[in-house]
Each structure stands twice: as C-alpha cells, then as structure tokens.
Image (cartoon, rainbow over all chains, first blue to last red):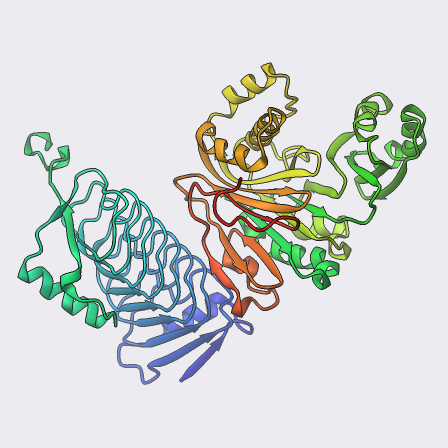
Length: 225
Length: 308
C-alpha cells in the first residue's frame, strides 16, 4: 500500500504520481489521506490500480477515469467520475450534482444519495445509487444504465435517448419524453448483474424501468439535416 | 462563481472563536471569487446599544470627530470604534433610525454597511485574507456570522457591490449566483420607495426581502416568495439577529453544503470550507434541497424544513 498525504504534497504531485503508474505496475494499491474536499483528486487515471480516498472530496474526483478503481470513504462533491471511460468509482457517502455526467463506461456506485443531474448526458456508464437521486437526473442520457434503489426527483430522464433507467422507489415526475416501460427478462438480467456488482441487496423485480418514448423532434427523420 | 460561508454556534464556548473559524472558512473559498470579500458578525456585547457600521475611503478625515458631530445632531451619546475603512458607531437603542437619518446630514459621503443591535458588516475590495486581516475579524467573537467572497458578474467591483448586503435592522444577505430580472425589479422597488444604491443584482434581492418584510412578511415568508419573484440563479444565506437561513433556487446549480453537530450549524459553498471545523468527522453533512427554506434560530426551535 502506497500512501499519498495531501497535507504534505500538492494536488498536482499526487495526480502525477498516480498518472505515472503503468499498465503493469506493481504498486496497485494506493491510499490518499487528508483530502479535505480538494478538487480533482485522482483525475485522469489510466492504469488498473486501486485508489482509496480517506475522506470527502471536492469537484471532479475520479474524472475521466480509465481502468482504475477509486473508493471514496466519504462524500463526493460535484461532478464525481465525470466523463469516466472505464473502471469503477465507489462512494461510501453522498454525491453532489452531476455525478457520472457524460460518462462513457465503467461503473459508478453511490452508497448514499446523489443530488441533482445525476448521470446527465451519460454515454455508456453504469450508475448504481443505493439511495435517492435529485431532480433532472439522466437529462439527455444517451446510453448506459442508471439504477436507483431509492426515489428519483423531478423531471427524471428529460429528453432521454437510449439509456435505461431503473427506479425502485417513487419518481417525483418524469421529464419530457420519458415513460415507464415494460421490464423484460433481459432487463432483469442487466439489473441483477449491476446490483450485485454494486453491492446492493435490492431485488430486480422491485424496480420499474423508464426509457425514451422517442417522440421528441430529434427522433423524427424529417428533422434530420 | 462566488464563495459563501456561514456559521451558527449552538455551543456558547465556541463564541470567542467565531471570527477565526469564519475567517478560515472564507479564506478557503478564495478561489471561488477574489474580487471582494465581506463578513457579517452577530455579537451581543452591548445590550442597550445599537450599532451602525459606516465606511469611508478617507477614514482619517471622515471618522475624526464623527461621534461628537452625530451626538450633537441626535442629542444622545455616541461612541465610535474605528478599524481601517470602517467605523462602528454605537448609539442608545431606539436612536438608530434618527442616527441613520442624521448621518446623511453630518457627512453624506459615508457609506452605511450595516445597522442593528448585534450585526456588524465589514466588507471591502480585495482577497478574503486581506479583508479579514484589515478588520481583525479573527479576533471577533459572536454567536453567528456569514461571509462572502465575490466573483463579480452583474456589476462593478466596489465596496458597495461587495456582500453581505444589509437588508434591514440586524438582517443581511449573501448570494452566489446571478439574478436576471434585477433591472425590472429595481424599477418596481424604487417606485415602491425602496432605496437601492447600486446596479448590483444582489442588492435588488436584498431590497426585495426588505420590501416584503416592510409589508408584513416574516423573513421565512419573504424567502419563500423570493422563489416566485426572483428570476435567476441563487443560493442565498441570510443572517438575522437570532439566526441564519438558507434558500436555493429550484434549479439549484449553485453549490451548497451544510454540516450540523451539537456545537454548530455550518454552511459552505464547498465541503472544503467546512473541512477544518471542530468535530466535522462526526457531523451530519448534507446538501440543502432546492426551493426549500431552512432556518436556524437561537431563540426558537430550528425549522429545518419550511420556515414559518
């Protein structure tokens, strides 16, 4: 286990140290102490390493992540795992606004609640929230899965493309063009896999699926250029 | 962007540290806005006195003899304590309205930062650390306070454009965001006879709350109606004589984090601002909900949901 203490080193040095880890590094286990809500912790990683942040983080923790597993033993500020490409980010506490925004791949697990705009414009990332999510979540979400074990706030899935949304609890309101859809066996299989990987004990049968009605003008071929 | 901090102490033993805790919180938020900074401190040190805080660009000449000149006009004793560009004028309780009116005769160039029984506002152009040092904020004690560091968007970087804004006796407002209907609302409020000094959007927000309360609304009701009447982005923190409140617009894109322990309730634009508070490891930390008024008071039970 390698320890990086943010009380002693600058943010840039910490990130450069992690960036320097190659695909076949022997130093696969890292610990970051004294994060104190700093921004951009463990951003842009691209190696199969495991990084544990001992405390709460500020903006953009784990942004652009590839391959790495990042555990946050606290809560995460806005834009956690933004534009993640692959790998895993697990947050023990809550996540602020736009968690997993624009993510292309990988798995984001939020064990507490997520705030507004969770999964906005997601492009293939899987997000599992053990608690609730705030308003405007999955706005313009393109692909990937958003799983919410608790409740969803206002305007869920507004202007949605092909992302799948699974909510166990209540949905305060659906956004434009977002509708409830039938849960088919292939969806239950996807859910079962995601719930297991996210360590959530909910049952797939307890969820409802939401998706795009594909009625907005973007779906009409006559509007194409 | 802008940075807001707030600290409401439940534990009286922390009161001597209010200034230093708030200063540390605000300095941490410096990179959210380096243009100007301000702090409102509530301290109940003189039970039978009210305070007016005035600012001058030429304090040496303007503050010299100001207490005697003001005392003569209002016919009551006035004491003065000068720190840098600000002076705290203490007058007998009940004489504050007279004193405020008299100030414009005694020296119309003076700018009024705040008025009230317990509130003192200190604000200037500059970085939080410099503004705090200039007014020796770290040495101040008090029961609660709020601070702001500004990244100007809607109006000039001046002392009067700095936050907090005094909205009425012992009331103040800080704002992160921008109001888009401030021009029309300013015209409307001016027609209603509300004094608005600058082209600043937040001053209009503050004046709006003042106007609502002059028409009988409680602070909670005024904040509630601000959700309907103010167009734009805002996270507001308001200070009152006995507490502080928080409200965010329904879109809630301006950040806000709160922490509560047995000793305090704290507000920060980011968790960073709260990270050095005593006992933060065990605090309940959460994000205030959009379009919801929160309020904490020393005299009443806390209303964590909608205020009365």
